[in-house]
Length: 130
Image 1 (spheres, rainbow, N blue to C red):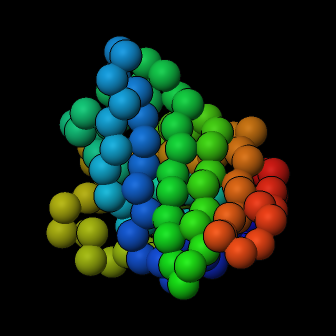
Image 2: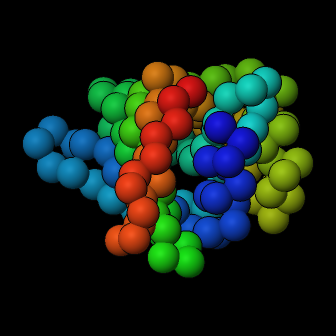
């Protein structure tokens, strides 16, 4: 999981896919954190993505860097604990102008039953599960 985190962090931007009814939805993201041995992302509860994940927690992210792409598929589980939110916001202090660990909007989610696949055009895919 640390290798997955490091790749996502160094890529800077990854794309998160969710489902809304029968329509896929993809958007850029940049927050990623490891807290209590889990891989977390962050969003706001007022956003459509939060509602989509509440209806269907299955999600996939994809990032590309230096000719390698990473896909992480799994379920995103909401963690409403202040400690988890604080950890994320401490690692992304620029978000503290929009989010607070104590507000009702900040949402952090961790991957459950995740499969990460590193791929390139030159090497065989490699899978990591966490």
